[in-house]
Image (cartoon, rainbow, N blue to C red; front, side, top):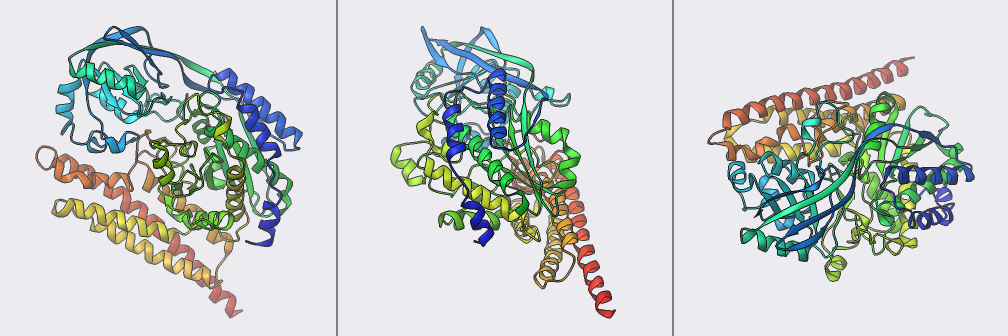
Length: 593
């Protein structure tokens, strides 16, 4: 660790962040007015620390759960409605049907039938015949993928059976952020509720016996003004370029581990970086989002929309901060990072904790609202509890809170936070930011991305076999890899213009991140279900399934997807080659004077 990095990290204190954790532990933050009060408190704390803050006031669309229950078999079961469920306060009755979920993937946001349901259904036609006109009982968290499937199959409603004794809040829409006109058709039009596992087992038995149920769920939907606090910390050299670090301020109930600890981390980052702003090359922007839970990332999506050109021109990286500093979360084996950022992330974790981490491809979740712009990204979840400890405690997997099953429940209270782990996580975030903000050359290695793209293309080709030829994609990836080798070799030799090299590294993100993470056009937002690598080629993995009826349609889709991929890879290669050749020519000219 460099002396300057250590000097700045040594100024980290838990005084301000822990005080915020303690306050938020008494402050529910999912209703719109409560979130705004929390922003006011945060802004006051920033001001008292001498950190200037701008508070934006956008109007966003939210869906706020109020109450739910299930009446069946002469009994009333406690339930929770996920945000964006259709509200039926008067109740909706219907026959029950049980559809077994894939037990390995009850958290999955995948749109793949096998991922969601294993061998319970073999085709959408079979599923439609089973669930149409019925209330489906299934083991899951109420999530966007299965809700959209069930609605398209004609189900009346959904009862999601959670895996434990507690019921988890969540959301069931595939719409990312505030819907636009094109998104409205995907807004859920059936009610969904979640129940705990003991009650769910009784409802499954009722469904298997041909029983019926009445779902009651009430939500409040509409347009709400939500405050968005943002701190701008100016750099001293490339001040127009900035690192965006952010997390959600709203939570389910008091949400200490998800995400009061993240809000506190951002507060301390803002304090330390503001006090050390004279030591930053690039700028840093710190933001707290509303509407994460009740608006499906409405706050970060609004920001991505409203500041799209600024982000496109100037943002070199985005760093998400969700659920750091939770008890027992001493492992970093679920750390999120895009391929080009992985080495940076692994190094920062190692230098702070001595731990060897593992990075994972970012999910289509969290506040990753910037993929369609094309911004290199890392972190969402950072620390989590070791798998062995989780299994020893009998915990099932959840998507935050450091692995604590208090996630998205009223049990996510102060004891979920851990001061020592919070301190370590704050330092990991801070060191990562410093290594982006202060690097001469942006520390993102696109050769790693090209290697992953090559592995993806090989996987898809093996799956497609003789049914489709992906050699144009594989050739284009090879050409990009060769160009990147030349580009980084030149930089390693100390040749070339640093500013020009950084423009290339940032420019590659604008091409390759959307290519590898999105289907929609730039500046739109993909649906909130899992996006496989090179998503416009993903149908290649299912061609044999379409061999009978839909092969021609699938191959047409794949041809169009390959055209997009090859064109983007060629453009990326041109940009890299142009920079490499220009810098080589500049060296010749300079040397000849």
